[in-house]
Amino acid sequence: MKAPHALSLLFLSLVHLTAHAQTGVPIPKLARFDTAMSALLTQYKVPGGQLALTYQGKLVYSRGFGYADTSAKVPVQPNSLFRLASLSKQITSITILHWSRRESSDWRIPYSAPRVS
Image 1 (cartoon, rainbow, N blue to C red):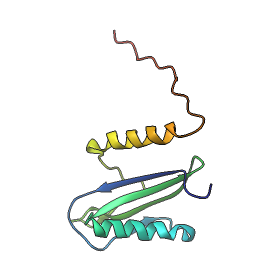
Image 2: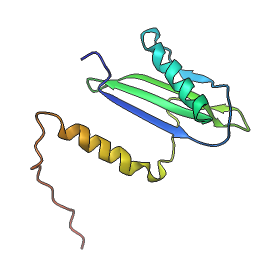
Image 3: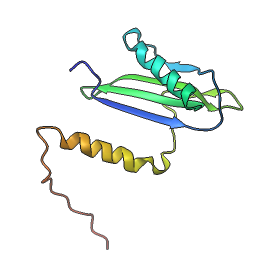
């Protein structure tokens, strides 16, 4: 499989900017992701965000784009933290959908809630 196994994309919306600083290690073979991320930030007027790609369980790409703090011109770093707000439901749903389509999925995984005393 040549395409990345998992794609994580998080955005932070503060104010509108058109220039997008990039942090992290550039990887020439994955430059299309740099272009796509910058285009998304511009199109949706998002001042900053992160993009991370994993392949076969390993992080192969992690970059920050734009600004985490626009007034102080602090760029988003590959390890910047973002608040998810209500996005966790969608991320969980997509993860479950992806996992359910794998041939080796077994929905009968035992689970027991922790005891509350």
